[in-house]
Length: 168
Image (cartoon, rainbow, N blue to C red; front, side):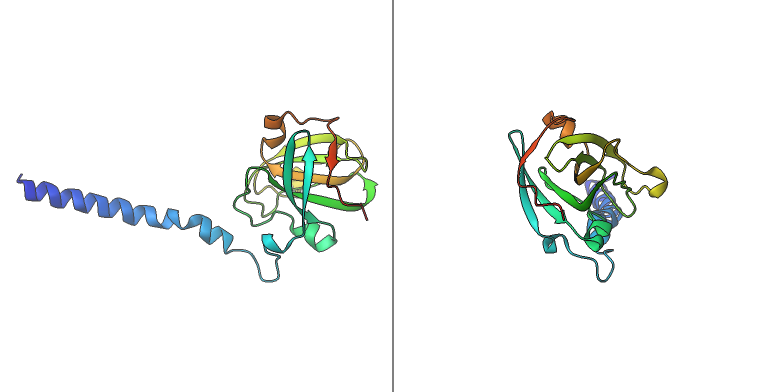
């Protein structure tokens, strides 16, 4: 086999690899574009800065029924200290599931005084048959990237010291 033949085969192989990889490279963009009409864009949610120990959390706020229903659905990524704070109008057990949620999350359930009562790990795209319910009543829930609370040493009993909006 001549040098020219090896060069052409190499180009052919590279072209095939690129052709096969391109559809996968566009996958996150395609997932982000599956947001249905009328869904709120991530930048449209109000935001708060929460303090948990020495960590500052940039949290989008879901404080009404429509925002709580959408939550982090359709998102393909979160920044390392980014999450979503759910604010409820009643002190109760508030259950969550992961319908149309494309990334795995950790969730902390929080009392009105800012005390974390329960933490759970949630797999992406699970339906309401896989509910995540706290054992304790609360008025807030904070979703973060999966494993965030454990990695930061945040556990039940930890206080969210600053930034919690008033429960409605």
